Structures are given as C-alpha cells and as structure tokens.
Amino acid sequence: MEKTKVFNVIILDKSGSMDYLREYAVNGVNETISGMKVSQDKYKDTQEHYILLNAFCGHGISCIYNNIKVNDAKKISMNDYNPCCNTPLFDAMGITLTKLEKKIDHLKDHMVFVTIITDGMENSSHEFDSKQIKELVSRLKEKGWNFTYMGTNQDVDAIADSLNISNRVAFSYDGDGLNHAYNEMKSQMNDEYMIREELRMMERNENRSYSNAERRALFERRRMEEQQKRRNKENEDNSFSTVEETDSSLEVKQEERVNGENGENNKNEKKKNFLRRLFK
Image (cartoon, rainbow, N blue to C red; front, side, top):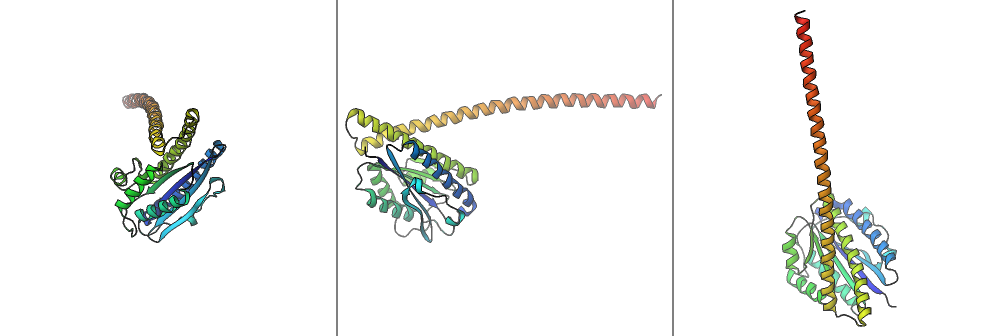
C-alpha cells in the first residue's frame, strides 16, 4: 500500500525582536520534532512524514531542515537560530511555498501542513506582496494544503484574514506565550495525522478517492471539532482549578480568622496579666 507523504512546513520568524524568545524558539522546535517522531511511529504503516523548517530575517532564509524525513531530523542548537534585523514575511512565505509546490506537485497522495510563526508584521519583502501571498495561499488551499498563522505583537486576526488563512493562534510575547503556540501546533498536527487516517478509511469504505475540495471540507470540519474538544477540556480543567483555588482560599481565610482570634485572645490575656501585676 502506498503511504501518504505528509509534509510539515514551519516558517519561523528570525527577525531581531525574536532574540528575546530565542531559547524558547529553539526548545519549541526540538519538542515539536520529538512529537513528530512519535506520530511517525504511530502511523508508520500508512504515512511518511517530512519536515521543512525555514527561519527568515532581512538577510535571507535559513533552511534548517530541507524536506528531510522526520526520523532523520536532529535537534537544533542556539547556533542554528540567530535572530537579527527585519521581517520579510511575504518573501519567506512566497519563496518557501512556491519551491515546495514545484517539488511535490507530481505526487498523487500527499498532504501539506504549513505553520507560520512570527512576532511582528511584514516590513521588508522585495519579491512578494500581500496580494500575491493571498492568491498563492488560496491556490494552494484549493490543492488541499492546510495553513495556520501564529502571531504576537500584531492584530493576528486581521493579518490572517488578509492572507486568507482561517486557522490562526494569537500568543503573548513571552516564553509562556511561545510555548503555548508550539503546544497548539503539536496538537493541531496530531489532529491532522489522525484525520488523514479517518479520510483514508472513508475512501476505502466507499471505494473511491475524494477530490481535493471534498478532502479540504471534511478536514476543516473535523479539525474544528477536535479544536472544540480541546477547548472544552481546557475549560473543564480551568473550572476544576478554580474550585480548588476557591477551596484553598477559604481554608486560608479560616486559618487566618482562627489565628486572628487566637492572637486577640493572647493580647487580652497579656493585658489582664499586666493589670494584675500593676495593682497587686
């Protein structure tokens, strides 16, 4: 049986402002790679996973992983990721996506998941503009490609809309925020691998292959369902934590009240003893 080739594409901002998040960015990439390897092992009989990681800044694009098999990807170090200068986001997207399209367009059974991670707005592209990128994204989505935009220090919804990317994540400009973005990316990738298996089974049961439009529609519906499940679970966990915190707060207040009463009683007893000694 022919395996589905799964291309995981990460376009990572390497502009100067990302220096503040440098260590978190490197650790996040390594954790993501580890998660991909686990998924590759899980779906080894039906999927073949690849990774393309491009980090970009005003000096150009650094190709850290060039469509290598996930199991061949080694951990990156701080030396592989040195933030500097500007944010040519449109060029990074345009160059990365057009090259990949030419390379894999002949493949019959493949999937592409593109994640863009940036802490700032476009400010220095020369080859591509927003209109061209929107047209490119739209065309690739018609082929079944999936896109996620993750950003901070910007109006994430407005920028994602301008690029025709419906799936977006806004994160805070700190280590916890970037960790959240990476965790969300890993969760979405796991959803995507699982959903691909579901589609494969549906096609097998119906003895036909879905069109790209059918796959995309089914995929988007299932992805939204899985995301909603995660949100519901997070809300349940938060509610449970709130109850625990409330109970703990009540216990602390009760203890403070008891201690306060004991303290007041001690004061009164000391006062009585002082008066006894004074008038003895």
